[in-house]
Amino acid sequence: MAGLPSMVHADGIQKYRQTTFAGYEHTLGADNGALWDMENLTGELYPLLSPRRPRWVAGRLGRPNGLYAHDGLYWVDGDGFFARGERVGTVTDCRKRFASLGAYVIILPDRAYYNRLTGEFGTLEAQWSGAADFRDGSFAQEEAKANTIYAAGADWASRFRAGDAVTISGCAAHPENNKTAVIREIDGDELRFYENAFVIGEEGDSERAVDIKRCVPELDFICENENRLWGCKGNTIYACKLGDVFNWNVFDGLATDSYAVDVGSVGDFTGCCAYLGYPVFFKEEHIYKVYGSRPSNFQVMGSASLGVETGSAGSVAIAGETLFYLARTGVCGYTGGIPQSVAAPFGAQRFRDAVGGSDGTRYFVSMADQDGGWHLFVYDTRRGLWHREDSREVVGFAWDGALHFLDGEGTLWIDGTARTIPEGCAREGPVAWSAEWADFYEYSGASSSSAAIPQEKGIGKLLLRLELDEEAQVDILIQFDSDGQWRTVHSLDAHTKRSWYLPIVPRRCDHFRLRLSGRGGCRVYSLTREVYTGSEIQM
Image (tube, rainbow, N blue to C red; front, side):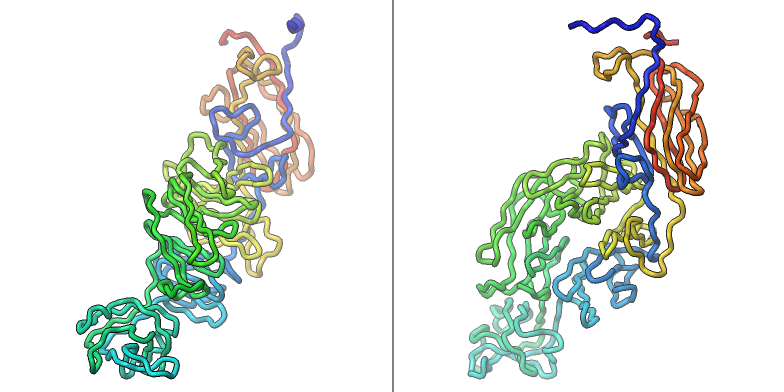
């Protein structure tokens, strides 16, 4: 049925009212009412448009190299490792990765540990070098052949423990003794192994330069799952002995053994984490999960799926029971099957070097764009919306009753939604914010489809309903036909909720943009624009 003809004397004025303000949508196809760009906005009060709450400053570091939380906050400032604000150890001056198992916090790439219960700080590896005798001895109070290494004054117990796997090198009399073996007993100056662990002469062997070392593999990434530390390097996946962060080379055929396996796909591992009860390992184009409860039934299952982008291992975080990370094509959400992109609102933007964190339902990620500029975005899993906060590079996120994050300048922040704030924290000042809408390209008729007829427009009025907090202010600006000139329509400063009726000098245009720029608390409830249409002829 054909539509009714337009009224001959219609004034051509149409009203468009927006009461739902969604998230970031930096795409060329953004529709009327979409937010093209923003600064320090939040979806906390959705569907209202509002700036984020002020954050809190919890401390400042000189050279920020990492942040971690377990039963408190841990961080690395330069070459110092700090536990709950106190320096407890020295590490190398570079960016760190952390994991924990039991009482131990592990620091990579140093292969160092901190015992949370005793306060002990040290290295996971241990080494002894010197002259030693390989000879007969005893085991379990019975005589045993070729099982003992003796070195006067070696003080073995200060370096090793029974159950440690040690790598022995430097043996010249019988090179076959250069091997990895498990220490079974330590008794004074004697290291005892299983019987016939070594090949020795009738009177034993005396070696001048023996090196005995408990080794930890070089790991790029690490996580904890089911009472084991898991890590990866290159094409190899490793797991420590059950409950033992010091041993990665114990292979006794028991359920408590260490574990190592190689995978055959192209490229090196780019990250790992524990998710849904499994250790998960990422390459840029593969995802691997390790199933099983003990080394004898561990199975590595891989899929050709988008994994973590190189350089963005820190982006891996769980929010709303979904695992998020930055892939080559943008941020993805992973629930154990095929990763799904959540990066559509970024359009053609591409990012790198991401670091992510979570407060449980929101995913925070700091990323560098193609020009090297930094962006801190927040994805709300409850509403499926992105918001951009600011241009902050983040070194690490940590949850310790509230979301903490350490920025590249060394400031330790607490997110503004925290329920409790530690003593001594300073609150951030009024938040500067902005919201820029995509092009408004009003069409004749109610439809904005390709069938609608584009015409020149005049902006008649804008009706903005908002509420400002005390001492807050906001400016309303408009731009016509992408001419690059922002014209201030009005500057508002109020203490109570009210509506403003903002007349604008009529001007015909193909499209226009609107921007709100303010400081302090604000809630935008609705935006109504009156537009009158003209002919198709450019004036």
